Image (cartoon, rainbow, N blue to C red; front, side, top):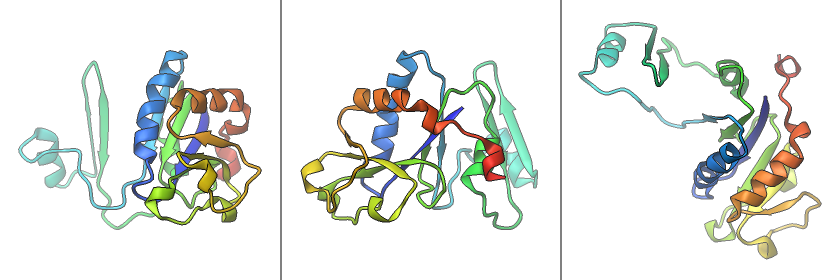
Length: 177
C-alpha cells in the first residue's frame, strides 16, 4: 500500500484535488482509499435509522453492511487522540493507494496544496515531510524550493508523478509503531 498526504489550509483545494485524483488513479487500474481528518463533531448516521438508534442506546461499535458497502461507527466514551496511523490500520488489505486529507502535522510524506489567492502561509519551508507542492500559482510561491512544483489544475500530471515516484510512498506500519 502506498500512502500520500495532502496538506494545506482550509480553502486551499485539498478536497477538490483528492476528488479529482481518485478517478484518474482508478482509470490506471488502481484501488484507492481515502483517510480524511474531521476537525469538528461529525456524523454519517441519521436519527431514526436502526444504526443511529443502536448508537444512541450505547453501543460502542455498530457495523452495518450490504452486498455493496460496509460502515463501521465507533463511539469513544472519552476523547481519543487517534493518529493517521491508527486509521490506516483500519483499512482493508488490497488497497494500492491511500490519499490522506488533513493530518498536516503527521509524519507521512505529503503534497502541500497551496494557493496564493487563499492568502495563507506556505508550509513547505518548515515541513520536511512535504515532498511536492501542488499550486495554481507557481510563480507566486513565497520561497524557492527544490521540491517538485505540480500544477494543481492537472490531476493527470499529479497522478503520473505519484505513480512514477510510487516507491517513495510505500507504507510500512512497523516504521510508525
